[in-house]
Image 1 (cartoon, helix red, strand yellow):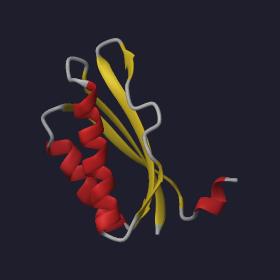
Image 2 (tube, rainbow, N blue to C red):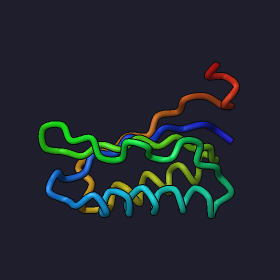
Image 3 (tube, rainbow, N blue to C red):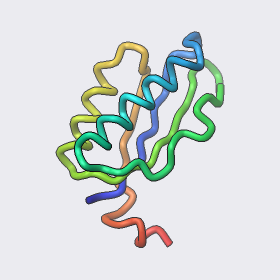
Length: 94
């Protein structure tokens, strides 16, 4: 498995529960396909200008990462997202 970080920006007018729902959808998709969510969203709503930001680290295979990216991309509540490969293993980050 590969370690990734999802960064997601949603519309600022959305309620807090909506951002949690988006994070839960992405996390569920990772877990249901054998991946692991490493750091759930701790500060899921930090408002800056006109967007809400969330960051989630997860381990999964490249196919599931592409599926998560497509799911987030097609969500009309999401303004922008990015998934960055952090390393092949969690040990590489230390």
